[in-house]
Image (cartoon, rainbow, N blue to C red; front, top):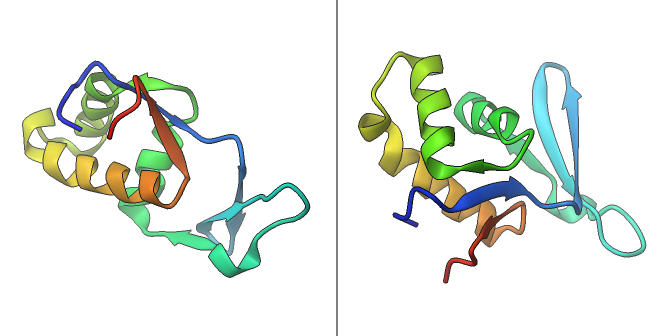
Length: 100
């Protein structure tokens, strides 16, 4: 996903809830919530999810997270990209233009 101008966004078929201080993502199918696929986010993934409250370029996402963690965008880029690929595989985020 190395193109830093790709726009990353949450998919619309996910409900976000905070339960006991934890961020939980529940995919929604056409007829109901899919409780077999509930995702509990760790603190880092929750920070990424929060920054994705609106569509952002990867560049902007890295800049905001780097500022939050007091690191350079280059330092966190590989970990953030790995997380985004995982979230995409699970159908929780998408990016434009489409990444294969």
